[in-house]
Image 1 (tube, rainbow, N blue to C red):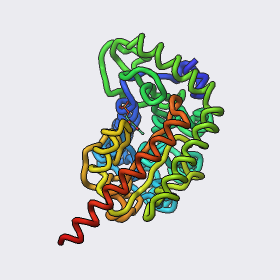
Image 2: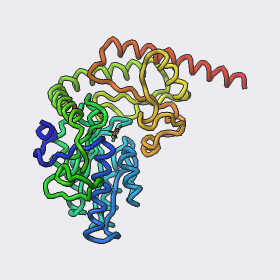
Image 3: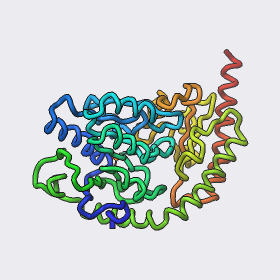
Image 4: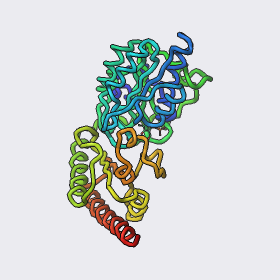
Length: 340
Ligand code: PLP
């Protein structure tokens, strides 16, 4: 079931504890494998600056190369080509996330993979597809890559279960040694209940994807249009055609998103400023920094995510609340400026 939705054989599935573990198993596992077979100098990991920390920190831990992104948080293909051209044979793994967890942009994974196959044919292509299952057909991503990471709680499954797809013939050094489960690729007793939940959620998500993309894309556009027509000085960080249907990300000038999030929370609206996994930060997120979003805009970042339980009524209510709260906050800032 899981293999069918991902687009691989059952033997190419490794169950893990979470998306972070899957990403680390692919990146660190590929680097260690290459170090073992080719020597320490010949094992470079590469990713973009907008990857989730599960990838970015793993690449940095391995002393890898972090590539700049374009303005939509997608890896810069020219910069990638230059790095691959320079390091060629020494590249062990290149990671390209399918969907950015913060701004929702879609990476052209097929193009990244094609570049790697041409310029560093021995390298493994990994895709962190943790944010993809609700929006993209995983078969279209998996067909281009050697390893692919998923996390059940991102598509309605239980927390504490992940998947790493490992194509036949790809050998990674395991992170865990022990009982040799998953054909020595991931030792440790399986979380059977979690895996059953993961499989059920993945199947449902695959079946509902097309209709939900249509429905939620419409609701997302309705939300963004309402906010942008009612509020001056707001930008849509990544235009709708470059990203997944359930992601709305705006930058609102002249407000501090901490105050905005506090008031939204009081109004019963769950939103995020930076990535949910790195919330609480007053600095612009590493993703917005990589995209080159100016501080004035980045400090007013607002991320709203729609999902299968989101209704039109909720969208209209949320838009009304956000417009009122931003108006209040801007009025307050203007009064403070006046007093000074
Ligand atoms: N990769 C991406 C793109 C994510 O969004 C997340 C979590 O938000 C992870 C990896 C980490 O997954 P997990 O929370 O299952 O460790």
